[in-house]
Length: 493
Image (cartoon, rainbow, N blue to C red; front, side):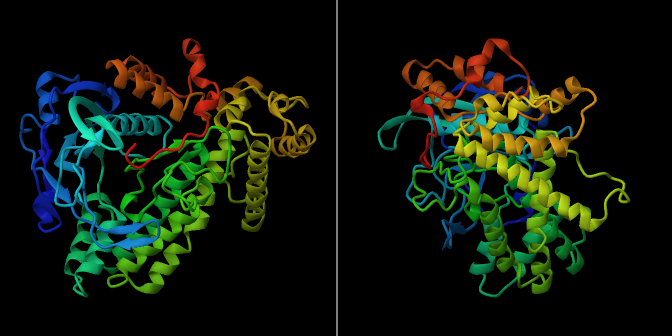
């Protein structure tokens, strides 16, 4: 790996230098060829294994943990920081630089009496979900590898430590700006320095002045809205949408008790610590805006309040526009024409409202009939919109309710000239395979009980091609068994 150290060299005082502690008997549990290409790596080797398990120093690495704060479940915590993640630096790849971080690398000044370790089950889950989301075209951090060990760690019981090697275009979070807003007591020097660095590194088309700041915040609002629209379209629940887990560039990261929906449930909560359902699946769009408002508060000393409000007011429209675009593709609804003469602005707004209602009514049907979200959308690859019968109809308990919806759906889709192409397009955007929690759990159990990582590797390969028919893997597309339906996870999982 070839590193540059822009964050480390330019933002002294924004981190603590800390060296990771090695894990004993390190071994590769998983490796992503796709992620490796991002930073110019080929195949895993023994020397790299020893570097990424902290047994050898990686040439050119600086090793540091960032400081930040954040709103956790609605309450402000003034000092958080990387409690179990240590960044080596920015690895230079063929198309840009990626931060390389050892998640589970040992204690840092921000570990809050914790051991700084990740247990194997959490490391495996983060590895799988990072690469699964990327294959689904959801903006996300990546995972180069997961490294197992025989080092014992204690949670509810004794487990073994592991490291996820995370790649991220940026580790800068909403919480970074909150920290320097609250901690500097009116001095905007570091806050301004951080904004300027963020623009220089990740928004280089913008200027580091008032006009640039205004446009930058607008783009942060837009990218956050689009990210959450992606989550809603694929049925992904993040589980811990604290502001310290929100990327300033609109990538999904900091995975804890996440889940993909099995049976569709708007109020699904995947985090067993979320007793009030703050981060339920259906609440994610609203929480995204709430978090952006906390970021706006932190930026108020350097960006005009009216400019912040104007940008925040674009959030809902941006989210709906992105969500509708994704769901229209999934259902085969006509996308808005690029020819502005086709529909007036008022007519397009009305059409958007009708399409959003049509999509919403489908999710109501899925929940009322207790249907699997991903499998139901995949069914549209078997639907012939020119016919009155439908593959979906046979899954419904409320057949009359579905027939009413389907008639409105057919009217909207219109006559389809080439049904085979239309169905193929639906299969190209509706995954057959998703990372169901029970599948990840089965892979974890095999590793825990016998050190067997074959199911993990099989699952990783399956999820790298989520839209493809893979006949030999058909069982992985089925609804979970009763024990695996709607599993919830802890933050340490």
